[in-house]
Image (cartoon, rainbow, N blue to C red; front, side, top):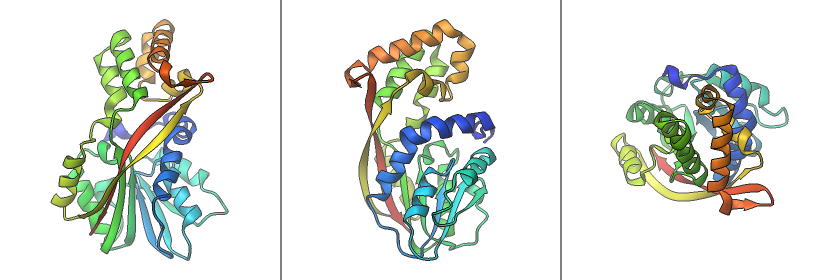
Length: 262
C-alpha cells in the first residue's frame, strides 16, 4: 500500500488541481442524483481531501454522523483543514479500507468516489465496507467508465516522448472500468445491486501544463527535462484540439455510479 501514500506536497497538488477539476464536480453530480436520509450515519471511503465529504456535510439534514476515511494521513490533514465551519460536522480518520476502525453495522450509507480501482484487494475492501453498514444499508460507488480523452491523449504523448511506464501511469485511474466485472464483484461479497447509471462531467483545462504536472506523471516528466515536458504538453494540446473553446479545453469524462445495498 505504500505506493498509494502521498507526500504533503502531492496531497496539496491533488487538492489544488484535481479536486476543483474533477472530484468536486463529480461529488456534486453524484449527490444531485439522490437525496440523503435525514439524520443518516454516513461514511465516505477513500475520501481524499474531502471533496465528497464536504458536499455531504452541506446537504445532510438532522443530527446524523459523517465520517471521511482515507489511507493517507496527508489527505486527512488537508480534509480537516478544508472542512467548512458552516456545514454539518465531520470526523476524518486515516485508515486502510480493509481495516476500518468501526463496529459492525455502524453506518446507514457509504460512499466511495474513485477509490475502488486503486484497492489492491477489492473483494476484501468491499466486504469491509459491507461489514460497517447496517442491515439494508447502501453503498454509492463511482469509478470511471472509460478512459477520458485527456488521459488518452496524455498517455499517447508520454508513450511517444517518455516511455511505456509513464504512459501506463496516465491511464491507471481507468484500469478497472468493466461494469459487468464490477457488478459481479458486488454480488460475490453479498451486495444486492439496485441501480447502475452513468455520470458525464465536462472537465475544464485552462492550463494544461499545471494540470499535467499535478498528476503522478510529474516525476517522470521532471526527470525527463524541460524540453521533453514541453513537447508532451504541446502534443496533448494538439490531440485535444477539437475540445478547445476560447483557449480552454473542455473534455468529457464518464463515470459509473453504482447503488447497492446490504
